[in-house]
Length: 323
Image (cartoon, rainbow, N blue to C red; front, side, top):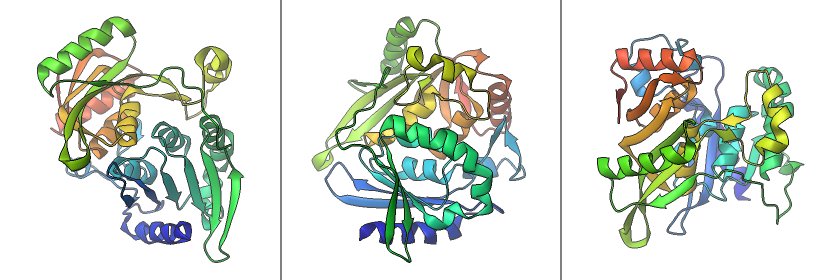
């Protein structure tokens, strides 16, 4: 079966991780826009632009590590993730669970050995209390895969006709071209819609059959993860005081939806109304996006976003302008 082959490919990708203690890999497998099967594997890694800063690998970017998690790395590298499968060596954290659900992935396969590692023992509570519920709400099936015994065990299997509630989906609009004018027009239009809320915009290319190219704008605001409705789940969302949040930030939503629909975001044509969070800034570097506009640089979710931006601009890793 291809599931066992793809998990073996994922296990082999672990050797590419340079992390000293937590070596993780993931493979995304799906069908691209030309209806061709593909699979891409990635280990967790530090983007070159962060390594070139001359900081130690353990240094924080704001309150975020400088690494791109393997699951997120594979999603960013995939050709298209809508309806795809992802194979992982270890239990995935809630942040990766949010990215998996937002990217349109439908099935997660976890290597059975991942449940027995010390790494898993540190993550079990978060995996059971957040990662799994996030997948269940989004209708993402999760399986434990044993390569040696050739067994696939369902931890959660979504009904085939399941449709997750999506209160505020990322907007996807056609634009005539990728230009400063196009970006300015979209930002002006949605600034009035979102009325001071944190939102983000990115212009992207879509390569269709026979190399036909169209241009798209993705627009997102911060919102609870797929399957959660703010009014209905407000108490759960607002009372959560742990390390992880139910909220998915705008730029992370845009990165995941670009992957979902096979879009290539054009560097330099990205706008965030407020300073992105530390993790958003690191993930953007993982997507090779280091030039963007910020509407109001005095506003951020927290001081860590400001600290991350200061560090990255001081080291000439990113270039930020005001639109």
